[in-house]
Amino acid sequence: MRIVTTTTMTEPGGHRLTLLALRATVALSTACVLAQPVLAGGYLSGRFDFLGYHETNADIISTVLLVQAIAATAYLVGGRGSAVPLLITGVQFFATFVQLGMGYSRQLAVHIPLGVLLVILALHVCVWVFRPAARLSRKDRTRKVTHA
Image 1 (cartoon, rainbow, N blue to C red):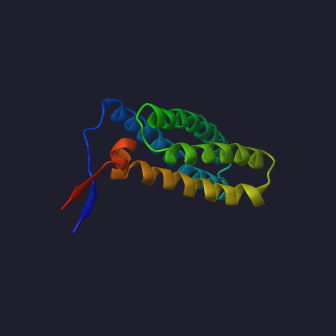
Image 2 (spheres, one colour):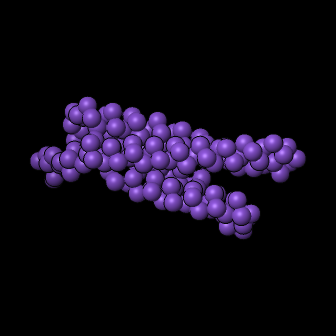
Image 3 (cartoon, rainbow, N blue to C red):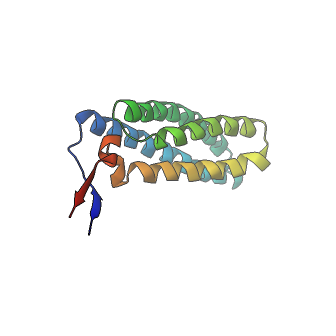
């Protein structure tokens, strides 16, 4: 009988640092994205200053996503990690700019469902980067050990 398992090799320092930076930026962007519906709800319940908070938070999200894209690129290139976080971050970044445009033009039929998609994407990338598999470099993921 052959059992194939993935080994966990000693992580190079660059991989750990890039993963730490990616996790920090993803956690921050996810928290900001999750705050958006709360801020919109505050506005809709009559606290009109919450619309300004919602707008400011949207600007923060786009900035944090730019930093997250840099961290995801460092994780991919320098840390030899997966491309998944960079791909999801790219979709988030593009969707956020569409979302900003839809919000400013008051196209709520697009703005609200797109906001739901952004929440789903943020949660997805957040879960992905905190999985134990994210700690493995591409090399370690492909390395297999066969036992007899």
